[in-house]
Length: 231
Image (cartoon, rainbow, N blue to C red; front, side):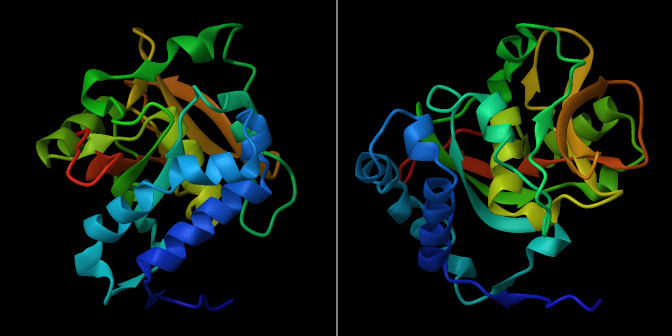
């Protein structure tokens, strides 16, 4: 089936769409907030989105290529990862995403952002110039992470990977899944999101083991308010 291809990018409309997506998925209730309060919490990021991607507003974007201008991220302080992951689906799918049982009890809490991937907002922020990184499929994760760092880009965290497929489920496709090297727990495990049982799955792989179907996702920057930077 032929894909629709690139479409004109309107950052204001895209920001509204992402807020609407989170609201429809029950994030306000999940966060313990009324819908109006949840929307108000995110609203300051609108100006950030418009300012950050102003140069791209007249261009085009194509999520199926694995590249998107910005993604609205809600942190685990507001919404637990197990709950947000269960609100993801594959593009056109119905089965909810899930956390793999290979995460022992308490393990997710230990996978925190590395200093290089520390986020700039307590509850919500934006990641910019996002790539799922399929060029690194088949690469050793440690080597992929070093290459990305050398480009001045930052590895995505678990929350950011969940946000990416929440807003752009078409990014997660067979043989183009991705690792999330921005969250580590002090051992050799690297979190990753891939497809299992016809649904998104959050699992992990060893940092020295390459997989032909796992790339390495990254972002160009993180921002909470205009002018702030988290990378």
